[in-house]
Image 1: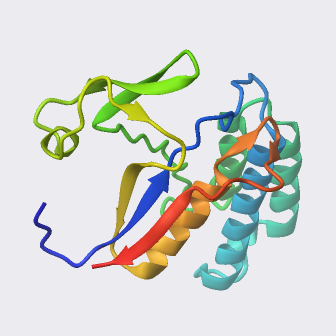
Image 2: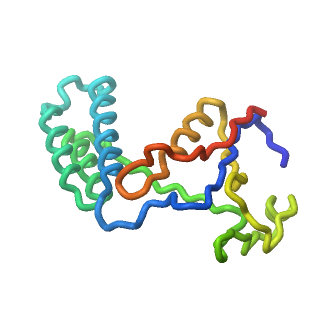
Length: 189
């Protein structure tokens, strides 16, 4: 595969055991903390970079406290985002607004399925790199094998992606105390 830029990529390992969070209607503790961190970062950026040091007369501390309380009571992630958006809306500035992060989806060029106590390739995208490199239907996938590559513009972005991949795996509300190594290597090309 020819790339016009030098890229850094991560080889992501698969671990064939429980690594996914159960689906829940409630906001997890981890998600709530992410919402609070987002709020804190935004308030710090406003304090540091906002053009009006008086915030159009708004009490930024009170707005921040109100948003934090809304986040602590939010029944959904969307409600947490709405609390942050309300804080910015109360600045009465049409140029300052909140765009919530969009979910990132990644579709592998192939799919696997557990059959008995083993995992097998059950679908391959026709013409994909996976097919070109010789992946075949019925191939067995074992723990520790590379299942995906993440391309990044530079080593710092790769390190950040590795940190986010590792942090994304948790069971229930709690991150794993000793999560398995998910990033095999960072390669500069």
